[in-house]
Image 1 (spheres, helix red, strand yellow):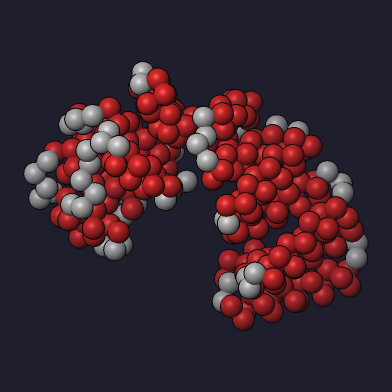
Image 2 (image 1 turned 180 degrees about the horizontal axis):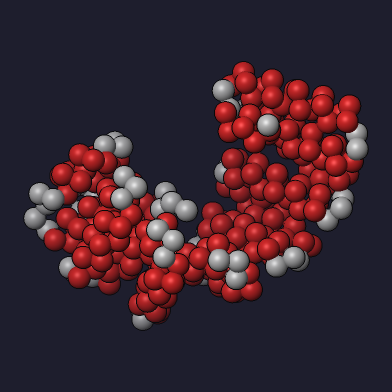
Length: 290
């Protein structure tokens, strides 16, 4: 679970509100934005401001898959934080890095500390509060503590500021309810998430959500409804010029037809899907299909 791109948007908002003092124009940050992570590590070590130095160093280490070093750098940056939001960003990134190391207890402790810090600002830090709630929910989801995941995803949606954030929360709720063997609720929130993604123009997320909903219908012994969702997705993909999701929809249909015992249709859909996948070089689809 990588550090989300939406964090960059939050940084911009907080910076423009004068409650975040990190220098987004430092040499290390510019190199990270270009994907030059190893050079960014070198550049970070030359930054005089200790918060900026350690925070950007942590980001560069993280993106270089040096997660232990990232945790240390984010921890060091927290010590030099000038403002509460600087401190909270250090906690947020540190918690994500700890999770990617498999240190879930430490990650949960870090996110909880961040959440408590955010709450001290009342409504001033609602954006950060939502982030910590969401990340705590992700931890519980990965640990298969589904009731806790549902609780925290639900809380994150309450303080969501826009449809993109609500879609994230609904998507998480859908996965958590499915893990909790409540398929009807999983489908309900999956539909809510998909509708939000469609509304905001997040078409890839919408398509992935539709595939997931189809799998839930199949798990609920309703292959016909699963096929209906996938055929709708296939049409959506064609209409929007996405051969990747057209192929994915076809391959998923092949699996449904196979479960129904319709070998002829299953093979036909499989051949159509793999043909498109080969044409566009979608190796992940080809790997999962075999």
